[in-house]
Image (cartoon, rainbow, N blue to C red; front, side, top):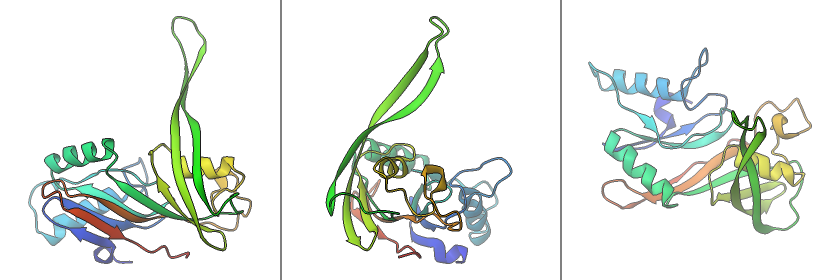
Length: 210
């Protein structure tokens, strides 16, 4: 897919792309990242002399594909961050699981460990956890549509793996077939209010593995 073909929506405030699997959302030492690629593309396309302002509003794991929203101004970034905090981002993923979940439709609620460290005072481990909630709906075969209520680190991957149904290709969370190199998790649908007009923006993207 060419850089131009990745662009799903663009205006003076937003830059929304269809991120391929296998590339990081943000700069990571010694690795390619989609943010740098998009900045270089805009700089060349628009013949900009100075720096290009572009910041992801949310992240996708390196091996996750799909919709990635970036802000083209600091004001848009601030307003979109508030939109996320107010839970006005409606995010839907498509996932192929190694096994079927117990019901055709349902809710998963877990508490995911955030981090662990040793207290300087008591020299004892402390564990922090946050509630993780998602809704799932069976589509066909082992494909599911998943709506995130919360947005925790590796949330979908961890929750379905806990249920004994890891995502196909997610070897970190127990998917058995090492020959499957692509993780079958795709951010497929998103709706949210525009940061300035408040018009509801709706974006769709189809996974290549469906």
